[in-house]
Image (cartoon, rainbow, N blue to C red; front, side):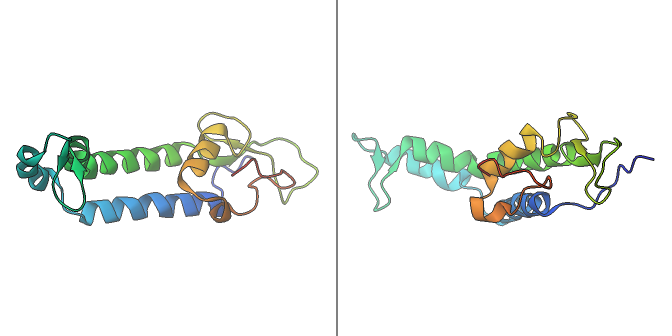
Length: 141
């Protein structure tokens, strides 16, 4: 019988914690939209607002939308993480303690390329820990 509910492995847990942490901090942050708007007329001929931070017009555009865009981006990351998770492939194995795992969404062998890409993008190498598949070498994660 195939077990589709597996305990969450530590790289998935760390990735989820990282994304949710970004989401919580972003949600608590103030939007720069209203703050950036009055600074736009102060942009000088060199393209900067004459304050010690040297904000360019592009900086103000970025800051005015960053909070909302980051909230959308982290939500996407969490939704992708929910889609790409391991499941027991149900095959015959000589090591019952370490069943062959496949991604629940794309059916690639676990960890799937989508999960690996997310891990590489959001976690530093020291946060990824050991490989998720017993005996498999880390792939630059």
